[in-house]
Image 1 (tube, chains in turn blue, brown):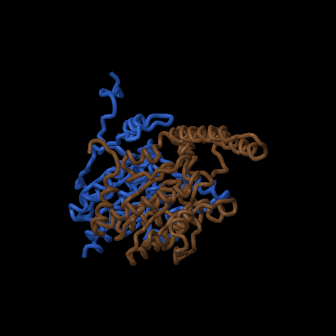
Image 2 (cartoon, chains in turn brown, red):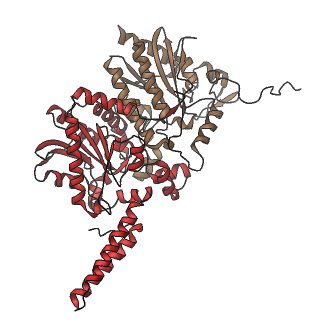
Image 3 (tube, each protein chain N blue to C red):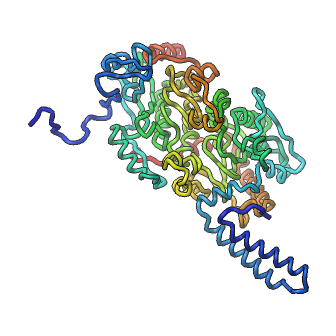
Length: 280
Length: 320
């Protein structure tokens, strides 16, 4: 038996340990910089040479935010139903299964509850790897339950958005998740608990038009695509090229819809500061 | 009577033509055509009924976009007559022509009516931006809703949009934020809110004025997260699967009601709202008054709690 032979079939790594890191030893950023993957990981998945923020998943964010070993995942087993029996070129149930196998995730959002620099915090984080981070019933329900968990623990709530928008295969149900999450945030607000919305690349559609923009504090990663309509649709609608930097975090900040931009490497210390300022 | 016919309405058009021709023969000659006319009219009635009781989802989408279908201002004119004052502007950027609203008298009671507005001809369609509001449209709507709350007037929203406008300026002025804010603010309005989809209910652009104690759909309208055409283009990578997409999205009033995503359906006259706008207006009016009477019995706090609970319970998941 060769030393490289798999002894067990299938994916055996639990979701918690799955890392959505760039494959291979080297990583090339869109800016053309080549860096060692190991170095990238040590640098919060931010390219050390040009500051490019690579796309990462919930697991990486939880590791970045929570104090070591302090968080637990809530509602982990929740999965999508197929309320409409949706089928396009593929069955929705097959798409779900394929995505689950490929990513090791159950759906496009995970809830972590724990401590960040000793502050209690509930974080809902979207996974773009799972059907484009699209919001169906599970994403809406998990966010709603995550907000409830923050209310129950009497602690702030943080949302990390990274999504193409609503999940078409749940049609009307996915649309109403916008309403549902907005409604649930009111209950958090009534308790006087802060809601921090951290918007990452990319965040568009129904996610931008609901919870992502409703933070007490709206912050974003640098260089993220943030918008309601996607750039391609806008380009087709207006029939001309879009200006440089359109719909980036910096653009959205300039137009007054973000409080500030925070580098992922400084996220944890910044969170500590905001949470202290809210608390004292 | 309709003058524009959809492709599946051809048999209706042909019968109408036959009736007109028969009547012409009757007036221009001595021939007695009354029996023929009567027969044709009966046939027209049956054909219309047959077509309209078996509409496919895609056909309903087409009816919802019929160019002669009544739009928001038609409803307002017929429901309130002269007792309506249109209010303009979001007090910030502009007056959005794709979103209209104002105070009107409905059956002796002052209400705030707000809705997307489409144009009736090419020039007006452009003027109304095809019923696609910019952020200032949603902000105008919110301003009027807050005013209604202040003066304790119920709010009626009429939804008819192919979507919020996907434009450059719309992004600069925060389309996403404008809609998101409306979702949140409408949840806690102290006055009764009734939302009615009167035509197209496309995605966040529709939902942006769609948070109500009662959300109703006219029989031949659609309400979903995306239009069948866009859905086809994204999931099938071709514009040719709009009929399949319309089926798959379960976007009709019946399906939305069955899935508990809307609260009720308002029947349309035979042949669709455009075939008999008067009857449509009176059904809509009756429905509003009935629901208002019911909502009046609840105190504001209960209404808000019910509203929040209703939207929070939407969705289907496994292994909760």
